[in-house]
Length: 298
Image (cartoon, rainbow, N blue to C red):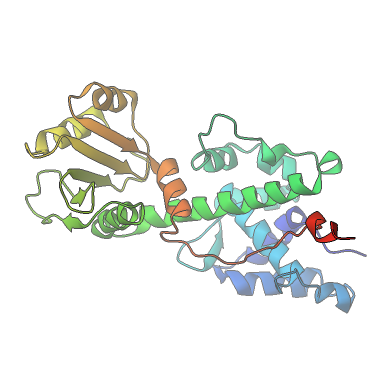
């Protein structure tokens, strides 16, 4: 007997959520464990990860996360899980293989929304476990965790108050090493949400515009209005959104006499993750190797 893989918990999770309005994440995991896996040996049920987490509960929670990415479940409010109509249809079929979920359009779109745009990204999601080195597996695991954190972070950004979102952007830029910032008035700000100092002394200023969009793309008109709102004391601006920029907006920013930097949702969560804004370190792993210098004195 062995513990189920995380993808083997998909149907048990959906069955547990069936006919329920919603469940807390932790309560869901416990109910799945007790209903479907209580006959496993106690040593398996109590098995821990190196960081002390229960392995089975951790896998069930990962199963829930993957179902969320593909919209088989939703989070109606913080910490709560609810089955969607799509999840009900999958439950009627009675099976949901991992390959099917990974090829689901909603899952693909969800992953792509925060995927790094580095030119030489390794396709860690498609790693062949049997032929992978231990380092490959570590990198793949970290990639999966990072993607999950970024997708959740982007969702949270899309839910927060628009004014607070503007402040989050200023906090991020401050963490990135820019100088002090000033929040503009919420009425009559002319399309400028904040003013940051490019240097510590405030000799150069950068104007910011933050748009908290769910699906709508930033368009050329938005960029044009932003440029028009910039006063004569600066020619630099940063336009940030939780969504994306359409081609006309990108073209307008590129051709402007001002220097306009565009940051979309994927780049935004990359920066927040890198500079620890809105996230915190959960676990630190140490990987050790033999110190050959230690044995030089033999």
